[in-house]
Image (tube, rainbow, N blue to C red; front, side, top):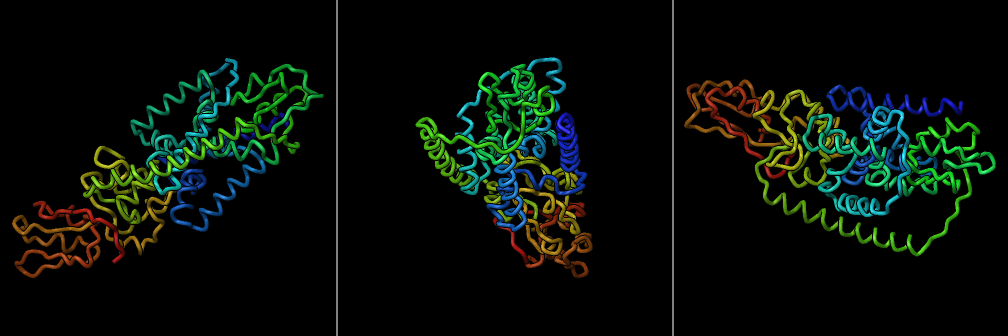
Length: 424
């Protein structure tokens, strides 16, 4: 079983990557992306949903007990790097990667902002967000991914071990985990086969040590060791806090506070400038969307109307553009709410979505030709018209789906954003 452990883990990782790609391409077989760490944390913090809190606790507890398997089995961006390394580094030796402390500062800043209720910082470095952006052909996502894959060629999973904030968080949980990767000093013959094949560069054969903080538990060393000297299990941990660690921890706390403050300020400053943006039902407001959306673009790929668009110069997160796709929000669809893993779009029922005002329609009397098409198109019955008269919109019923504007040939109907969504 030992020699097949790596291949079995690799097959499971490949299946997870495939399912994640299907989800991000709009084919949604199951909620596999609900396990993505940052999105899960965001949903747990902002919605306090029971399922999100439980799943988040399970991921953290699993890491504390078994180590950092998340990065090699669940994270699609990490798995993508591993498969890329198999191609890019064919017949090349892996290089030892130094464990740099600055990753803790990156982690502290971006998660500090997230704890403040803002995803402004983390969506530019979160692995799940980058993966989603790349698969939806976002320029930022594609460029970032290509840069990371270039790093993979020289330093393998350097991003996972020294940059990724999720990796830094889980690494802290994993370094003193109940079960870790270890070297049996009596069996080891110092052939360094494990060290040469370690994708994280975390094995030091000379000192017979494995850095379980950076180890992503790929199990390759475990499978290829000719003497079975690499073992996975419980080993008494040596805990010796040093001055360097104390200084590092104190500095990280300061960066956490700085990130917390920056997250609040950046969001408020930006949202003040934005007034005319429409969001999917459940997003609540521009400030809420700015704070919660990770820009994974999953809602874009799963919107059957094609009206949800990527972040642009107008607004820095996904939003609705009625000039795109079908031109209106389908009344019998709430798929964006069902697939959003971060809670940026609240998981509303179809009935609640059908009664949520996301915008407001207004008829321009001077352009109306009294055809009455809008009356029949409105799914809420909010538009009425007497014979020979201009159509009239009942503001108490309109939800801003834009179906009326879509059928209006003289373009006599305009759709305006609302400051905050309401259930009517």
